[in-house]
Image (cartoon, rainbow, N blue to C red):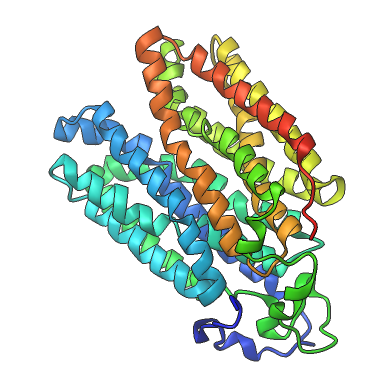
Length: 425
């Protein structure tokens, strides 16, 4: 039923391509476009830390006050993943990502004109967050549909766009702020988001069957449609998936690891400054996380094709726990940067493996709805991670307990993987 409602937005004009047309498999075009979309979306998202001191200086709003709209932003964009995922299954990624890119860009442009704190809640926490919800889930759900044998590699390439944006955009934002002030810089990034995401979305197609192709570029022996696979034991609707233990176990596992994943993104720079690291080099810790995340998404996604998703995910959880422990033991740049690199490598790997595991466990039929639901349930609590770390720091004067708590949650998530089995009817 989900596949019966197809939008014509994904049936033009690329559908007319001949199945036997030689050359580059169109799935890699989809991968390239989704890479760029995630690069821009996440690059803007993780540049907020660069803007925060300038906004605070200009408006007088404290950094603690500015953290609350950002937490609302994280909660809303994660929670709305269930909506964007389901809409991607029904309408295809083109219209969903286009609308999302417009909302994200408009929200960022409006944020540049915020003159009251409540403006930040509306413009950033609601409008921009609603647009951001149409990035991660729709992009990755679409790539899952295009690949099976090379799913880990394809998703690694796609999701590495987010890490590359994390590496690229903070210095870009700093340069724009120096040239135009924080308002002009934010307005420029908003225009960039609308333009680039809209262009790239035009080239995304929901699945290879709409172009007469098969996943991974295999020749189509007969007209294919993903809906014909609905009777397969590996194709599940969201309603069917909810009746399985693995579905809820995945929700719990990803909740444990994602609850604390934004702690370093928000607090690692002040943590580094507390260690005596100069401000610029402290800010570069975020770039280290982003660069390592790009490597992690690509490398870990690729090796998961060979060694299995669950085993590779377990390795990521152990590495992430090691990264948090490394933060506790850090005394300067010589120890901080390696810990940040380990954290970034593992964080990137987890985000690349998440949609791959959903596709492996529940098939391609309703991957958007299923991934969106789990992303909403497990990702929304990430909004509270930075608040928890800030509270711990206020009470204890140190981030050590927060980092220890984060490492423990990843170890628990690793232990739960031993209970995780592929669902059967």
